Length: 233
Image (cartoon, rainbow, N blue to C red; front, side):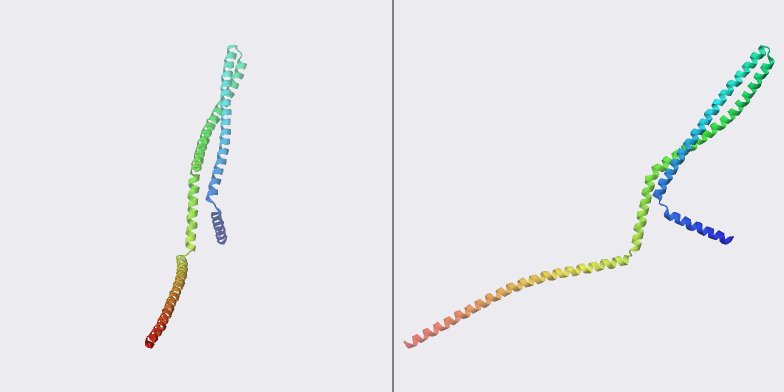
């Protein structure tokens, strides 16, 4: 028997855990509101039926009051006419009507108390429904915030700070490498331009030196010729 109790408790625990996991508070709140609305509709129908019964009992009370009074009057008239047998029959019927009147009054009192109690319960149920309805949006908003917070917390737990830091370091190294390559490319372009200008300067210097040499050579030849002419003279 102890094993069966443990198995039963284990099954109930697992079933309850599955139910808890499957429950969606937002859907459950809407279902609670639907259930409450259905309960209010049923309660209203029940109260209406009880009120109808109260009205019937009230009519029975009035009817038996009238019968009791009517048969009492007939008994007095029979006595006045000297008809004792007729008076006795009238009194018997008056007695029956009075007995029924007492019974109906008791039932009517009980019915009134029941109707008043049901009306109060219906008012409480309607008030609770309105309160739940007004809280619905707030409760759903709280549920959504809680769900979002939980999702963020689970995401943060999944992504460890160390992994994120390592990835950022890798990205930073890659950016630095890209910056270095860009700077090197610009420097190479600058060097190429400078070399071209230096080459131009070098060509100018060569030409100038060549012209100088040419000019120097022409001056030397002319001087030699002039010196020879002077000697001959």
